[in-house]
Image: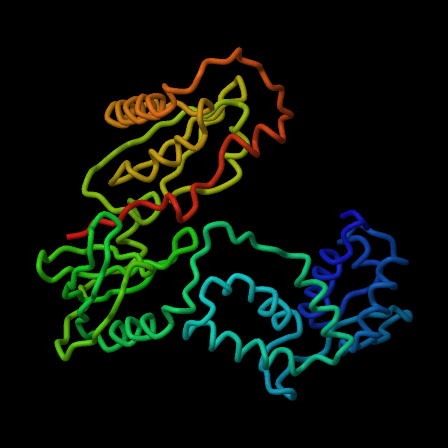
Length: 362
């Protein structure tokens, strides 16, 4: 590990010191982190100055071992120091839920974590937190939906039907539905309610941003036996659910093959690297809407091999896109040379919530 990444190194070091029951020697730490013993001693001195409870013991042959002593029970938190730091670092992942009951509870926990560190140690923790940043492109703000989400959660917990006033993206005005709420799911920066639409006896999804009002009724409902959000969405390439059975194969060119291979896009994903550096990705899905948008984001660097239905959808979509630009004056084409890194950056943008699939409304 490079000595040019001190925060990462020190984080790993803190975890080692907290997890080794009998401690760890400076040499062992240096070998594990692939740095000099001088660097490790400098990090240990920094931890001591920051107020972390480091304990040094001398064993056989004068061998010194270091460990981060105990947990934080005596300070009101039954967790270790590295766990407390990890929880604080995770707060940025909660920001999309600011203003909701989840954020309020998280803030209370964060304040307790803050109280167990002295000023010097907290400055170090904050420095580490600032080394991690989450982009906010397309992130939804739920501060004004806090009471509404609270009502939904109460209805889910008490298993009571709700009257949901919902303004669909395509509808000119809001409509009220009777819904059995099963749970909430978080997808691409947005919350979705999953529940049974009573009028149709069909499970639907509602984007919480478009919910205008929620009223809990006295009508109880039975939770479906064996139902889980994970199983329900297993065939979706995101949040849109269908009733089809599609085996999708897509060929990604060498330009984006590594990008595609670096992530898990769906539980059914199977990747087959090709000799020319390209990769074929296969998925088993129950709908095509979301994966079609995802493939389009790769432009010319992705080609649908099957099913034929998806090929025709892509063809039709591309024709309509071309028609949108037919009125532009013709100009001499100029080839722009992009570096491999630039190609990856521009080849596969994330649609984000703005292009999230339109929910199936009654």
